[in-house]
Image (cartoon, rainbow over all chains, first blue to last red; front, side, top):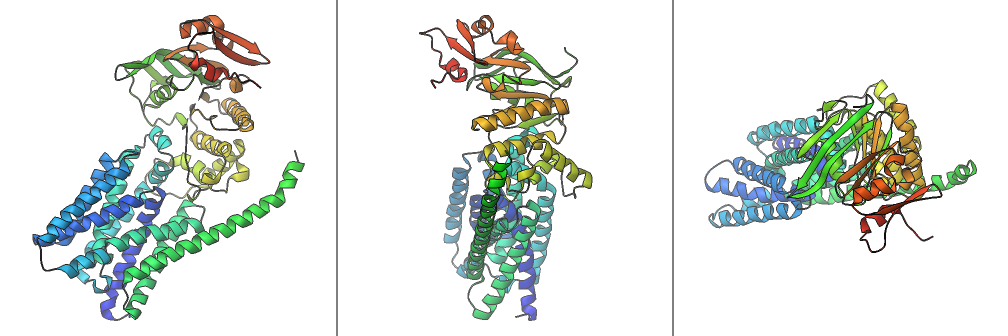
Length: 279
Length: 271
């Protein structure tokens, strides 16, 4: 499974996992799972449309995911963002349905946009993926502290001169970029799994933002590598393994956290008499 | 203007769609002093604080922070918002949140220096938060979170600290602790503290000055100057009595008056 044609799969998988781990950390922190679901799923319609008029699917994905990100960012102020996100999703799906009905030939390609075809990634696909990955990771690195503060306390951020709305829109644009690069490789459903499972699991293993972000990348890498290996051996879809492994990681993380909190509770019970004794 | 003034609010008015929220409000906050912004819910306290922060446009008047016209995001201002809801699963310890107060608006990563770590440590000690400094901030109690938020605001060494209803939703013991902490901090850091509350009794022991707000209009001065029947009657536009009992103050309107707005902060409880 380390044969020449698999080299691209390992490389693409590694890049995608790093991006999903980094961007996903803030998806989970900001409670943006719904946009992270809506943008890739809606954007696949753009790929379908691009294919129909003979363009590179990446162009269609990029246009649709950016439009969705800007729409959700501008219209979706606090409280209304769920409805706006849902409407962005259904509008794009409706367009996708219309575009698909005009085409007769490429059902396998649609399947691969939804579920990915990582084992068939070509060298020419790797370069745009790598460029967009660098852009996404750099953007998150630059915005790191602003993202942290606006995620946790938007009022404080606003008082400090950081506009939460602007940071929010910038983050959605990064989300759109990472969607554009990852959907052709791992599919719309898979990228969503990879952006939620590993970061949510990593939060259980560290109390600090930096290590939790690093852990998110590590777990995403382990998940995707293991999924590629298993998929190669068993011929089952990569997506199946990514979904199952992500959920397993999360389960392990919760169990670890519960056992740790249990220990803490026991310790504080033991300490309590001393504390009251000193009063 | 007083030379110790860090905040000057002069004849400020704010209207929302024709309705006056703040009407010709003037007062000042001085360095090292504790000022209470007292009024029941909906009288414009949050609007006033947002105007001072530069987040709310004012229709008339002027607001100066340390002598200069205010601008959004000025470092001379520290802010503790009304409600911070933190998810207990967020991977951030109390000390990480305090450290974020140093440089949250900077771009990129930098490793924090030894001096910065020492500063965070000292700030945690100063707000009595050392004990829970390594716990996740979302899992802390309301009073503990308030301490962390105060440390986050103070660490950038502001000259004015604004707190929007920090005592709401706290148990009485925590209220006492937070009030004592803020009083001490005002003196230690020579920062002007402006705290909004709908109930003044908890603040009476420490409050140097009061801004009493009702229906968008304000009376300000020392507690003795303002919390008097004549002054408050004029402010309310009808007669109210100020009753002092066991070191507490109650503001009561004559029977038959619609005194819903007064009842709330007079804290008249039958017990």
